[in-house]
Amino acid sequence: MSEGKSASSTSAHPTSARTSAMAPFAVRSFRFQWPSDLLTSWAFEMETLILGWYVLVETNSVLLLTAFGSLQFLGTLISPMLGVVADRVGRRAVLCAMRAIYTALALAVLIPAWSDTLNVYYVFAIALLAGLVRPSDLVMRNSLIGDTVPSGMLANAIGLSRTTMDSARIAGALAGAGLFATLGIGPAYIGVVALYGIALVLTLGVAGPNPSATPVKPAMPPTTAWQELKAGLAYVWKTPEVLALMLLAFWINLTAYPVSMGLLPYVAREIYALDQNGLGHLVAGYSGGALLGSIGMIMTGGARRPGRSMVLSVVAWYVLMVIFAWQETKWPGFAILLVVGIVQSVAMISMSVTLLQITPEQFRGRIMGVRMLAVYGLPVGLLAAGALVDWTGFFNAVTIYALLGILCTGWIALKWRADIWR
Image 1 (cartoon, rainbow, N blue to C red):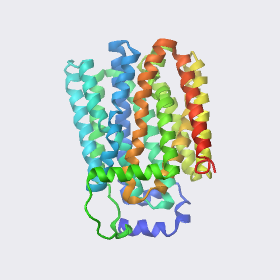
Image 2: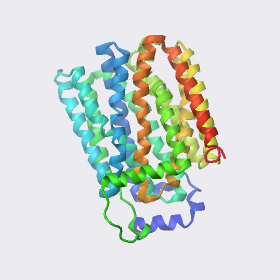
Image 3: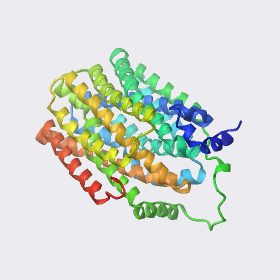
Image 4: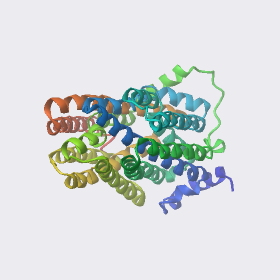
């Protein structure tokens, strides 16, 4: 049976599709996409941990560490236009090209690392180039899931997709830290290149949208890429639920992710006095919680009231951030990070499922690209956090971020309560 037939038949029986958490694997394209996304995520995490630790040790500067982290999200500014390109030429083709670029850039780090000629300036240059592409990877992943997986399976499919990132943060962090500490940066990067290469091969098996499931539209006059981008932005602005989700995503990236992601190398080295393996344990704790949250969402089929669940989880996330900032030793911090991972996973899965369900197929690449603009809050938040930590200390910086996050989340939930809370 062809994939198109299987997808259409499954959509005709959404109830049966929800009976199994593994139902999305009945779709052939998802069976290729899931392991490809998994290996790519593993490589991302290994690369980020290895290079982040390298920058911190070589420069001994939390500001330069956060600057390095910020470069990896520079491409959020061009994600909407990449979404337009993907809508035009095909999201599968764009994803394959992106993963070929990851492989080439990893090779560009491996060669000088192996010959012991790597330096911080070169690492920043590679981070800049990778940062132009990497933020759009999630756009293409989710868009392709929306293209190929029936609507009744979307919650399970997005939850399974989240497990690729969550489990990768555990395995990638532990493997990257272990290889780096034991063998050095050169041998560790062989693993990064290999993961990217295998992921690229698997991506070739991913399908595009099912033509038989896409309604035939009347011929329309040709439009420019800029006109298509403006149409996507207009859709976001005129759809209250989408606009609220975009704003909330921006504030989360600005004030929550810099603490739970970007500053962990600083916490490990400066507060807990840990080495690379200790940092790997902290990242694994956070990611283990996120994985548990994703599995819980898969098994339950998602929250019954996703908007309400999303808002409450985000507020809990900020409260836990402050509790985490109080900790002075590794294992209490590990335990708090585990719980932080759970609540952030519930919040972000609820957001992604809602956004995919309400976005028309012809706008999907653009809207998910605009969604990635919200991630630009992360590099801005990272840079500000680095300066704030140097100025006021870690605890005060985290407390300021948490208070701002709670206030903004409450304002968004109140202003758009008819679209989110209810």
